[in-house]
Length: 385
Ligand SMILES: [Zn+2]
Image (cartoon, rainbow, N blue to C red; front, side, top):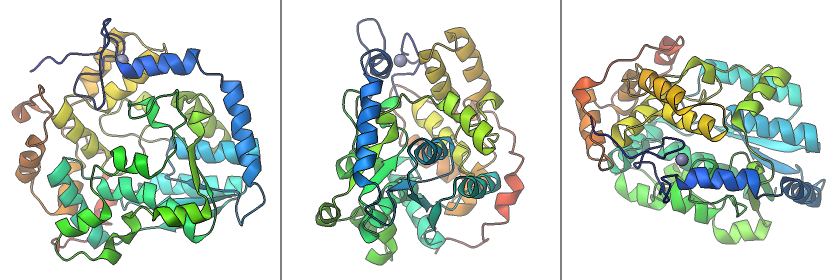
C-alpha cells in the first residue's frame, strides 16, 4: 500500500482536492478553520445576516428559497431560518432518485413541524441513468445530475417564482479551498462552474450523450445571467454568517424536530447524521477511496481533529476500521447504470490521483444496510436505453 503524505494536524492526504501544506505540514483547510475560529467577528456577521433577511421580508410570495435535501445541513438551515428569523420560506427539493425511506419520513415530519411550503422535483430516471454513466466515465464521479440539479434547479425556481433570496447551508470553505472564510461565498454561476458541475455544462452533456435533447437537460441548466439579474437573485450560505458545526447542529435537529439519522456504509455509527440522503452514498465514498486513497471516515475524523474532539491515534483507528470497503450498494449502482463491476473498476482506475494506487484485490466487502432491499424494489429491471 502506498503511504500518502498527510496533514500533520487533520491527517487528510495529499490527494484531497485543493489541498496544500505549509512549512509545518499543516493543510490549508486546517488553516482556514483557524481563521474561522479566531479571526472572524461572528456577531457582526450575524447582524449582517439579519439585515439581509429583513431587506427581503414580506416583499414576495416567500421571503426566501431554501434548497433542501433533508440531510442534517439543510434541515438545520431550514429550522434556524424559521425559528430564529421567522421567515416564510419556499422549500425547494431536487430529488436525485436515490432517497432513502427514513429520509422521506424525516422530511415530512420536518415540513409539518415547521409549517412550510414545499416544492419537490424529480427528473426523468431514464435521463438520469445516462447522465450518471457519462459523468462516471468522464470524471470518475457519477453525481453530475445531482450536483447540477441541486444547485441549478432552485435558482431556476428563484427566477420563475420571482423570489430573489436563496439561502443555502454549509459553505464549501468548511472542506475545501475553492473559497476561504475571509470571503462570503456567493452560491452563483462562478462557483457552479468552478467545481459544482465538474467542468461539464448542460450543453456539454447534451453533446456527449447521443439522443438527449436540450429539454432533457433543462433541470440541470444554470439560469441565464440576464434572468438572474432581472429578478436580482442573491444566493448565500448561512454558514458564512454563523459558525458552522455539523455535530452540534445535528444534535439540535434530533432534539427539536425528532430528525433521525441512519447507518451509512463506511461510516462509524456515532456519525449517524452524516450523508443519510442517498442509497448510493457508499459507492460515492468508495470511488473516492479508489481515486484518492481515503473515504468518508477520514473526512469525518479530520473535522473532529480540527474541532479538538479527537486525537490522531483515535482517528487513525477509525479510518482503518471503516474506510476502503466495497459497499453492498454497489450492486444497486451497477443495476442503475447498466454496467458490470469490472467495467466500473476499469473506469475508476483511469481517474486515480497520483501518487495513490489502490489494490482492488485486497479490498474487503462491507455489510449491506438495513434498508438495502427496499431500494431494489424501486429500480425497474431494464437495460439502459
Ligand atoms: Zn489539515
